[in-house]
Every structure is written in structure tokens, then in C-alpha cells.
Length: 366
Image (cartoon, rainbow, N blue to C red; front, side):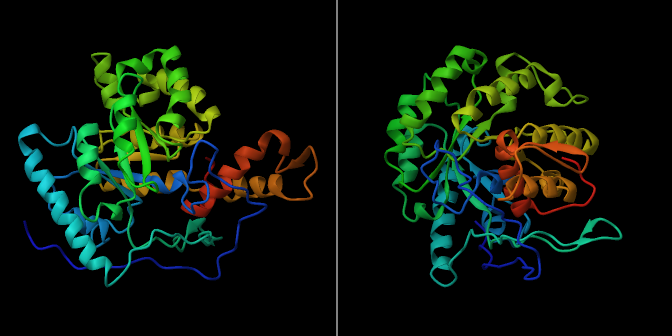
């Protein structure tokens, strides 16, 4: 394995940026035991999947490579062939050992600034970035519950933020529950919805209830595994349509209607056609409009597109702030729009949080 590069810290802050937090409540739902954490699922942003066999994982974690990445998922499952598992496992151990040695000298922080990007009023373009932490959020995806228990016993495993649990449904839930009892209590858990069982609405209702009990209410977000869901239908995502024009898109609407009212946040699945920017942008617009909190990416070119899609327009931010104002009327007009805090409050809270994390972009209506 090639020598790992030294830690590089990046990110700039803007002390003159306005504070947009207004009447800000606790943003994490009762479905999460991390409600006192400063982290919000929106901070997943663009989540890059990396096979654990890659030599440049530390370069990504330390931000010497892909400095604007929001989160990284180190995969030991589908992205690693069975014959490569021993090498991938060794790679994880070396990564943790190096990370621990660097941590002693320069602790890594995952905090983010609570400021808004400044806008050039003449062009409507962002002229400064929300301060990034000096590393992305880091998750590991094990192959199965047995591997998760082995990961939990590794030295320095506490350095990662949490785990992505593949193929979670009512059939596998009890095994994942037992395995998760071995991981640290503050680990963030992201079960992935990607098996054929998810096409059964009754199953999903039962799963939404069972998740909080199984994982001790530590679920940070639920990931939607698009390609596995296509596989369950003997399909592959078409290259000329967004996922929402397919049966999996229909299922995604159902998953949102089942799990979000229970307090969970869902993330958007990958779009593997990274050379079709127009298709990707079109799909992102729907991801954001449906309230999904991040999107899996597989190519660096997709990172900035995700972050721009999740930024908030000045007009929309003004409306959210007006709804959250302490002196807001029960119903009032703003920007030629009817605003009603009783029904728009939850949307306004999420919009302000999204702006805090991704910034403000003039003339963007998402």
C-alpha cells in the first residue's frame, strides 16, 4: 500500500455572512437518539461511495482530494468482490491506524459554520462558501451483520461516524439489531432500503415501526438503494429517464409517505450515468422537491451539482424566515404567496437548515 499523505485542513469562513437561524427548534426528529447532536442529515449532502480496496481513501477523508465532498461511504459490500475482501479488510485496518496517528496531532472536526453564502447582487452568484469541516462525514458499509461485529472490534473504529447497513428489511432486521449492539452508542446508523420486500406496503409499515426499536433510535437517515431495487424487478435504470419515471420512482414516493411521517430522513439513490449532466440535474430537482436530504454520487463531477441543487434561493429563504418569525400572523401574504405558519412551519424549519448547510443561491427556485 502506498504511503498515506499527511492531513490537510481546508475550508474558509465568512464572519460577515448574515445569521439565518430564526426561532430555530430541534431539527432532528424523535426517531433519532442523536437529537442533541449538531449534525443534521442534510450534512450528508453528496455521499461518495468508495470501495474499501481503493488506495486513496485517506486522501478523501483528509480533504487532500475532493476537498468539497460532504460524506464518504467506504464500501465492503457490493463494491468489493468476494476474492478482494481480505485486501479490503487490511486496507480498513491500515486506514484506521494512520487516522489515529494523525488524530493525536490534529483532531479532526465535523462541525460546520452556521452562515449563509454571500451573493453578488449583480450576477446572483455565490461569492463565498459555507465553511467546510476539515473532513467529510465517514461511514463504513459492511457486507453483513457478522462483518459489522468484526468492525466494531477493530482498534480506532471509533474514528468513523457510523455505518451503512445494506439490505435491511423485516427478514434481516433482527440480525442487524444484534450486530448494532456491539457498536459504539454514538455511532450513526443508516439502514438501506433496497430489497424486494420494500415493494410490499404492509411490510414497510411494519419496518417503519420496528426500526426505532431495533436500532435504539440511532437512525441518522434511511438510504434508498436504487440499483438493487431495479434488480428486484429484473430491470436496469434507463439512460434517458430520471428514476422518478420508473417503477422504482413510484416506490420512492411510497417510501417517503411511509417513513417521513415517522420522523425519518431519506436519501436519494445514485445516478450511474455521470456523463449525462442534464439528466442528473433534472433528477436532483425532484430529489430536493421531495425532501430527500442527500444523494449518493459515484463521480467527482456530481458533487458540486448536488450541493448547488440543495442550496436555497433568496426568495424561498425569505419566505421561510417570515414563517418562522415570532410575530408572524396566522395567514399572511409575502412575495405574492399565501404563507400559513401552522401548515408551513415544518417546511420552513427544513428550508432554513438547508440554507445553513448548503448556502443561498439567487434566483434558484428549489
